[in-house]
Image 1 (spheres, rainbow, N blue to C red):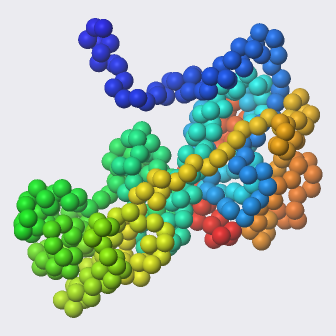
Image 2 (cartoon, one colour; image 1 turned 135 degrees about the vertical axis):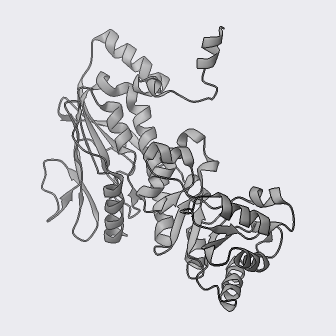
Image 3 (cartoon, helix red, strand yellow; image 1 turned 90 degrees about the horizontal axis):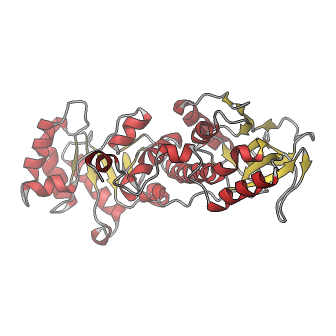
Length: 387
C-alpha cells in the first residue's frame, strides 16, 4: 500500500455517505432480491408503509429522521408521503413510499435505521423535557455514543425541546454552538486543595460570553466547594454544577437543598444550581424545584430505537400484505381530542380529523423544507395537545 492509499484509508469502523447513498448499507437479502427480480424481469409498482404499531396503543412517540430519508431517496422515481418531523405518532404508518420496487428496495435498511434511531432519541429527550419544563436542560450524552452519531442525538435533543448540547463537532454539523461547564479533570489538574486556582483560571481564560459555572464536588463537601467558588469568583459566578458520583450521593435532593440554603445564607441568591450525573426524567421531576438546570446524558442516548418495519401493502394498486400485517394503503389522523386514528385511504376519516401524511417527495424531488425551529415548535405544540 502506497502512502496516498494509507492516508485515505478510513481509520474507524464507519460507513461513508457514499456507501449509504449507493445502497450498499443494506441487508444481504435485498441484494439477492434484486438479483432474483432482475433475473425474472419482474419489477412491480408497489406501495410500502413504515409502521411501528399497526393500531393506536395510547403510547405516543416523537417522529424524527425524516430529512435523512428525504436526502436518501431524492432523485429516485418515487413518491413519498410522511408525517412531519416533530409530530407525535401512535399507530399506523408514519411514511408511505410508492414506486417500482427495485427503485428503492436496497434502501429499506437505511430508511428504517434513520427513522428508528432518531425517533428513539427524540422520544426519550421529550420525556426529559416534559419532566422539567421550566428548567434549562442540556444534552450531555454524546460520550455514550459512537462519535458518528453525535450530531443525530444532539439535533434530536434540540428537536424535543432541550436548550442545548455539549458536542463541538455536532454543533458544527447542525449549525448550533455547543455549550458546557468544566470537567473534574480541570480541577484535578490543579491538585487537591487548589480548586480556587482552577476556577480562577477558567474565569480568566474563557471568553466573557461563556457562563461561569463552577464544578463544586471534586475533592470536598459540595457545600464547602460551592461557598469557596462563590467567594473566589464573586459576582462573576453564574452557577455551580453538582455532579456527585452516585455511590457518594446519598440523598441527592437533600444535598442540593443544602447547597441552595448555604448560597442564600451567604447572600448568593443569584447563583444558580446545575445538576448532572446519570439523571433521568424521574430525577428531574424530583429535583426541578431546587435546581435551575440539568445535564442529561444516558437517559437519552440509551433509548431503544423505535421498532419500525417497512411492508408492502399494495401491488399495482391492489391490497396485499404478509400474514399479520394490514393490507391496503392507509391514512392516519389527529382527531380534535388529540387522539390518533388509522383508517384506509380513500375512506372518510374522523370528523374534523387532520390527515398527517403529507407530501415529502414527488417524482423524485423533495417538496418539503426542513427547519429545526419549526420542528421544535411542532413538537412542543403536539405534546401539549396529545400528552
